[in-house]
Image (cartoon, rainbow, N blue to C red; front, top):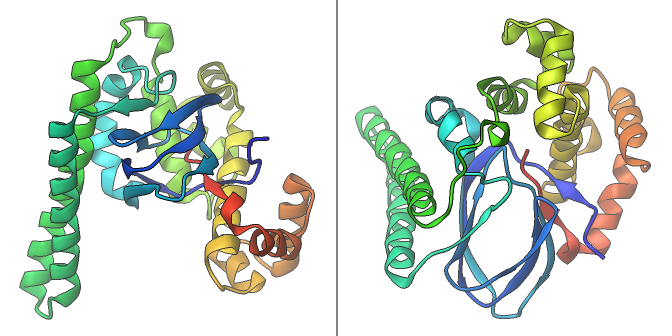
Length: 275
């Protein structure tokens, strides 16, 4: 059975297979990942891991969505026309795979340079170089997808600017804002019309997506950190630990403590979903 423990990160990026095999569900469709397979981590792709071979290896570049806000804003119509939600997986040839690995190594290099830099000037320089390297890898992956995959001209397949902006904004601001009205006002739309757009394009209501992002980030922190329940409640913007526990149990059926124990018992069964 597919894993139902779905996590989220407020991030975009790429996962690229360099060896072995993995079975996944991407946007409700099963796929077999092999060397050269890649898919974008974005607000448009959901991933559930079913199994991995013992020799499976991947390169993963993941960055906070805020770093990509400007480029995603400019590319919202392009991403919609590529039909990535319907066809999330791409198979790169060896030349492109090599180029993407080189991009990955460059990113690691600039990250190290940034970490080692002790001067403000150097930090600013390597931060900019790192940002460009990350965006370069992401754009190269999209370019290859564009060149080798049928992309639709059907407007009904597009995610509108309203929806893509909502995906990015909710990932940035869910800690402070969990009301549909706030996001509708940010889009300069009535709550009813805003909700209609989001529901018609994603199949989810805005509130369902706000809850999903909040719960998924809670699961990520419970799974991947040693933060206490109180610290996680603070991190996610809940006024007190009790409120967070009640919210988490209401939307998952179990307490945060029970969920953490479940993850510790079955660590290989966890995967991430990006909305």
